[in-house]
Image 1 (cartoon, rainbow, N blue to C red):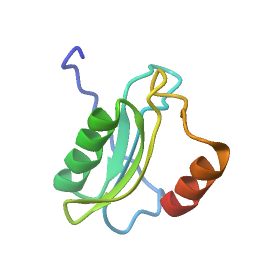
Image 2 (image 1 turned 135 degrees about the vertical axis):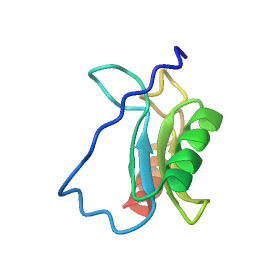
Image 3 (image 1 turned 90 degrees about the horizontal axis):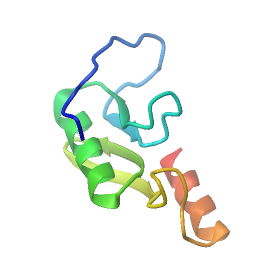
Image 4 (image 1 turned 90 degrees about the vertical axis):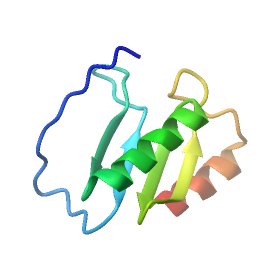
Length: 91
């Protein structure tokens, strides 16, 4: 990690609470996160780090759902049925 952090404002995302984070960011292959507060963004990003890549939903300081993507932060090594179930929970 370089320690570089980009910050921007997002409008129209429709998020009412919590945060979403993803290691799938094809333009840079870095973690990208959006949220309504810093604590939940931090929680989601720390979980992505723990998973060695993935998708995470967090709210009120807790991880609500996640999908580990440990292969280059892009791919899962779990069976398709498990991935589908976890993606449905993320929605």
